[in-house]
Structure formats: structure tokens, C-alpha cells
Image 1 (tube, rainbow, N blue to C red):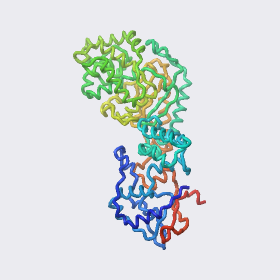
Image 2: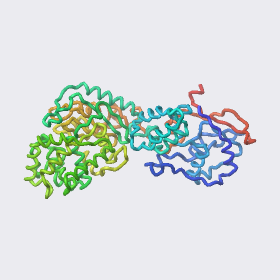
Image 3: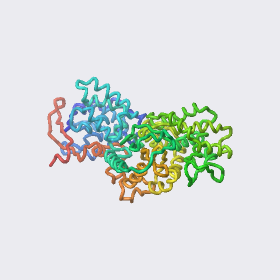
Image 4: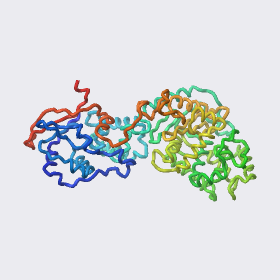
Length: 566
């Protein structure tokens, strides 16, 4: 039980009659995306009815702040500062925090993790952090992790942190950490959700059907036993299971990404002068155009080749390649994006069908004027040979889910228009000849590739990447299709699941799966009690004591759990 006394401080405030100027809270103001959501102070009137002292039979507010430390005092005769607070609420909050009366966000985070102890082992903090879904390698937490490492080197045991050292470590990232520990991320109960993902992974792992693609020799070298699933939410929560660090080539999974880049650079209208928007109903490498002599959509080979010709027109292939790689690295939050030269050479040596499509479209004048078709095909093969891991690709998918902002860096990479159009075409055309069935059964934007990858987007929630080389007869990963189907059978992620009335499925966006988070307002006294594990509390008169510094009687109150009263 945490206990505090500060009658001396209140006395000093009384004697000074609040003459000293008070300054408002400004910490992390620039970094907070929603100041009203992360304010450390609330109007004093909110708690006047919650916390009172009882002195000489008169009810008076104990403290003008909603955040009272666990052991407070009220000295008789102290001047009521309500008017001053109303005039300058933020100033009073800052002053009281400085005086030690009001816990800061850092204090509350320490109490939450410490669970009554005076120190926190560093591994306990890291474990609690990972339970929220955040990683210690998250770029947004770099300052915190660097300071933690430096601080532990200076501690006697190199393991534990007292409150002062803990606050020093977390203060630079306190807004993000507060969101995480208050369960304000899109998936509040992340450990439970991750356990469901693990179960779906294990279920699909037992499938032994399908064949590894062998028409590109380098792809045929992958083991059919490889199987990985990785996800990243729009808040940067991460979970991976399986062979998620093994690099593989994007192949057709790069098609929506380069289409997004083209729309980002040129706009929808320009791009679709050259490419259609309709599903083709034909094989992805079919030599066929629509009635306007345009490729049907950018998700089939013909459309992807034309889309490739729209990127950095007039530049050489080296400059174009660097440009796309830079985009993809930003989408991946600077995680692994590489290149397989062996796959590129293999693609080019066995690319007769794509050369035939290219020459056919050249005859039909499908390319922008002045395009070097053979050079574009080389660039096309290069982009198909870009390597990722499941983990880095899941951040790319999450960038699409997050409206073009990379979740782990906060950087805008793509325009909203580019993301919207990309997800629309992924939904209708992304899964080869299985696109209609996938849209019907899974109901989410996705793109598959012959390397065994499936890039799945749950808009405004997360990106998921599945990878397993064995393919079905339509060119989609057997295990990946099973995983996606099972995912929407458990969670209400299908685009047309009714979030209110579809009771048979879980909604991981709600804490506990069934109760949506509603309170995103100021962190007031009541919400802090509930969300920082100070539940069912009350203020109880402990004992009257004589203060050594004040001749008046001091009434002491402490905050205790309701469960402790019995």
C-alpha cells in the first residue's frame, strides 16, 4: 500500500496564497496526437464530489485535483484555491505535480507495474511492455530503450530501477506507453488475440497439400515445410509465429505496392488512362486486353507491366529501382527489404510469356509514349525479385491498413487516394482466379504471389502476411488461404460482418471480446482508478495526528481497495 503525507506542502501553499505564478503542463505537447486524450489534468470540479474531508462537521473538497496520491492530508484553515484553478487549471496542475501532490503519468505507470514494490526489475517492465504488443525495437521507443540500457549500467545491481530512475527512462515516450498500458490500442487484449493467432497457425500447419512453384527455378528450391504468419496493427502491435525471419521474394505481392506508388505520384485518373479496373476472369499471365485495348487491372501481369512503366518515367532502371526500394523501406518502417539477384536472373531467363505480353501491348500502344518496353520488362523482373520477410512485409500491409502512415515510424508514405484505390483493387482482383471466392468468404483486401505469400489487410486494424511455398492449382498458398478463412470465422473482420449484431464471432477491438472501449477522453480520477488497476477504491479517514510543523489538527486519509475492507 502506497502512503504519502504532505500537510507541509499544503501549509506552504496556504501561506503563499498562491501568489507564485504557475505554469501549465507542456511535456510532450508536441508529440501528443490528441492532447485531450492524454491530458494529465482534468477540471477540479469533477472530483469535488468524490473526495472530501470531514473537519468539524463541515464537508470540504480534499484536493482540487482528480489525481490524489495514496496518502493525503488536509490542514484546517487552508485557503480554497478553486477560483485560481478555474482561471489557470493547467498552471495549478503543473505546480501541484512539482510540489509532489499530483502524480505524473510516469508515477502512475510506475505504480501500475511495480504492484506495491519500491523498485521494478527491468525484465518485469520489458515483459509488461511486450504484453501490450509493443516491441523493444520499436523505433518510437528508441529513446526509452537507450536510456534504460544506459541507466541499468549505472545501477548497483544492473537489474532494478527505483521510481526516479524509471521515470527518467520512460519520460521521453510516456504518451505512447500510457496508451499501451491503458489498453487504448486497437487490440486492447493483445495476449489473448495472439493466442488465437497461434491456434490458427497450428491448425493450418497440418495441411500437406499443394506444390511449390517450379516454373521459376529459384522458387523451386524452397522447402514445402516453411510456414510463417506475422501481423502488425495500426498502433504498431506486433506478433509473429513460424519462419518469419526467412527472406522470400514478393513476386506478385509487389503489384499492389507499385500500383500504390504510381497513384501516389500521378493520381488515379492518369494511371487508369493506361490500366482498367475490372477483374479479368482469366489467368494472371493471359495474353489478353479489355475492349479498350487496356490491361484489365494492375493485379494481372499485363497491368503490372504497364504500371511499372509509369514509375519515374524518363529515368534509368537503376534510379527507378532505388526509388521503389526507398518507398518500400519506408512502408516497412526501415525493416528488411532486400533483392535476390539469382531470382531476377531466373525470372528474366524464363520470362518468355511476359515478353510476349509486353510486345503485344507495345503493338496495341498500351505504354506511355517513348517507353522502352524491354527495359521496362527488366525493371518488372527486378521488382518481382525484391525480398522481404514476413515481419517486414506485415508492416507494409499495416501501412496500407493505416491509411498510408507507417505504424512504427508515424511517417506518411502514401496518399489516402493511393491507399483507397489499392485496397479496392486488391479486394476485387488480388487473388488471381480465386478473387471472387476470396472476397465472398474472407471479405478483405489481399494479394497473393507464386512465392507463397499472401498480403492481407484489415483496414484500420492491421496488416497480416502469411507465407508458405506450396500452392494450390490457382497459384495461392494452401496454408495461407486456410489461415485467412479461419481468421474471419473466429473474428468479425469480414468486410460485411455487422459489428453490433454478429454475436457468434469475437471482436478483438473490444476488451474481453465483447465490450467496446468508449472512454477516450481526459484521464480523470475515475478512469485512472479503473485503467491503472486502482479499482474500487475509497478514501478512508485513518487517524488524526499532530503535525510538527502546524499547530492545527491534520486529518489523514489513505486510499485502500474495497476488497481490503472485508
